Image (cartoon, rainbow, N blue to C red; front, side, top):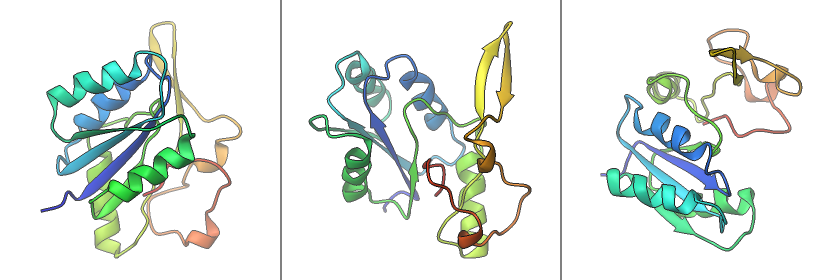
Length: 163
């Protein structure tokens, strides 16, 4: 049986953030997922990190390609994905809690939508506490509330935080 969600992560020289990204993905309460990591010819320790996590969890797949950029890496992930839904996650991003995928999946299936998404925010460490901020150009990524929004009313020129 194919997984419910295929998570596609383009990976290029992200050794300092990749483990956090993978940890937050692997800890999702919706576990029926495949994680497709497309290594875009990283020159740092990213590939070693990917191999470590693949040994820990069979849901991780690694695809290696020459350095062709994130868009090509995402498209390569799409061609190998087998999930009912696709989710794009960058290697420097993480899920803020364990139920993000479950919540998005439930919202999409209950409303019979083809796309589900959530707000975008940035996190930083300041004086030993995590600070959540919304900064330009990301202000427009914050949904005003839960509920259905027509696609034509909510489009943006950058970002892949939709599913």
